Structure formats: structure tokens, C-alpha cells
Length: 91
Image (cartoon, rainbow, N blue to C red; front, side, top):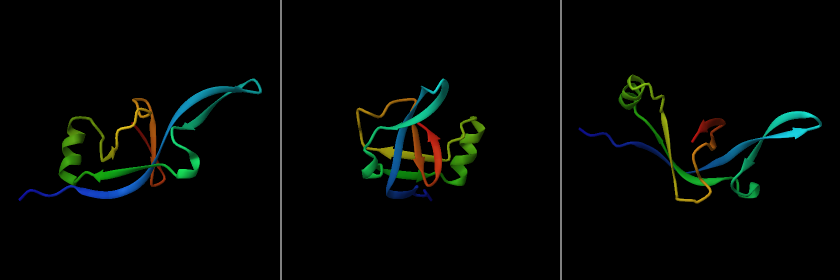
């Protein structure tokens, strides 16, 4: 029997990039969000992988346990970070 994936639909994720800046002679890393702060983030479907998929991903040395499905946006590119449920993920 084929199991359906576990979606948590329509959750807000915050997408940002990091950039080093020189502040008072010290280099600091700042977050720059790709969306306005007042909107709270982008809507996304969040897919938690099942235990069997996690085992297969770990065997391939790919520690994927969660997938984010976000609508196409020209601002989203490789090297960005996502915040969801208090955790940060690399895009």
C-alpha cells in the first residue's frame, strides 16, 4: 500500500541571505530577507519525509528530512536560507 506524504499546508517560511558587513572595524554577518518584514514570510507547503525515506536519504549521505515547496519567485536562488518552526535550513 502506497503511503501519502505528510504535508503541512500553507505555512509561512522566511527566506534570507547572509552578507558580511564592516561595522566599527569588525566584520559582522547580517541577514537580509528577500521579502518584506511585515508580511511575515512566504507561503509554502512543507513535506516531512517518512521514516523509510529518511533511512534511504541517510544511506545516500543526504540528510534531508524536510522539503519545502515554494511558488516560483525570481528572488529565490541557491545559497539562501529558510527559517521554519524556529529552525534554519540551507536552500
